[in-house]
Length: 462
Image (cartoon, rainbow, N blue to C red; front, side):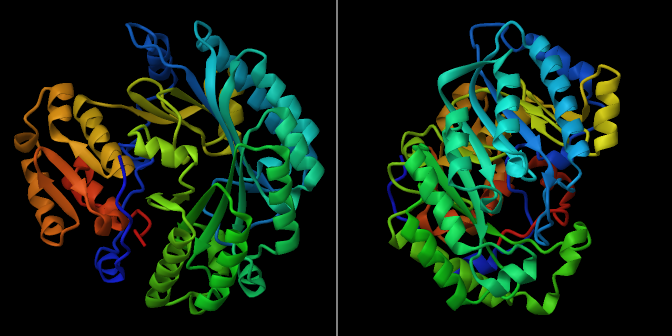
């Protein structure tokens, strides 16, 4: 479905560099409300297989602990070396697994699972194996499912990587960010390139179906020369996927980022050049620009799914997995069951308290309206496929597209004039030049932004 090459235009990217959502969900998580709680969640869980459509489950486990803090990190994590504290968390996580399994007892088929953090490999492989068994007890893990884990290369060696594959994980994501020593010092993440490359090679030898590498541009002390060197070492490993994230400096929200000095950050002009350099190097090496911050080899499942129009966007970014109801386990985890989103308590004491009372630890959520579902479909189609059939939307949602979205289409005329999107022959099609401003295009269809124009809370697009 996607065939044209991506065209990176720095002047256009700079022009549209404004705050905006990443649309891993719609409505976005900041629109969730506390009025949606455990009872509403239970209601929809019981309804999920009523009717002809029956979807399998996807699981997300949040393992929030890290041994050290990375100054750039904006994840919900807890830095500790207290074994008792981290063991206690697994006990409570097991309790939540039991509660959720009982709730979904009529259909426990799982086709996707992702473990994130924090640092999942904070725990040793024996402990991770026991946690896997705890899940595989009540839930039915499909033999051909996608099972992924985020790995800090500093916490594993080759035998540990092989053990993860033996446990059952078949996809792995390694955090690198940058190999340059001065950058690593500035962000408090000292990471040997030799060790990192060694565990990546071990993952390849162990037979992981997909290896992803995370990089960040815009970090303190980064230069074009040093980041180019990092890119060269990464490309030499030929990972299946590369995630290229923009560092969002928000020290007023994330305490650890206050340890990063403004004077060490690359200028906006340099940051844009870093992005342009990375795009040139990655696409020149044969990687397909999937969208947002994701690149993949043409034969990777993400690229194949995009060509076939099956690509999806969820809380882990882009996904080649099919339709599934998502259960989120652990502190702050987000789930999506039926036409709802829900999020667990963000603080450990609150998470434990709910489970002590035998309750689901849900803090907030939202039940999507018909308008939400329509707009989610539109935003997903544009962000995943860079194209949208207006007729298909009209048939599925019984609307007149041009009439329903008259204001939105008017807002898109600026993008049309710049040849970033084409509105003709019943299709909205994002051009190769428009793909790097896809968030801006999607924002035109966000009713919540249209209503209050409060975009200050989001990270910048670039």
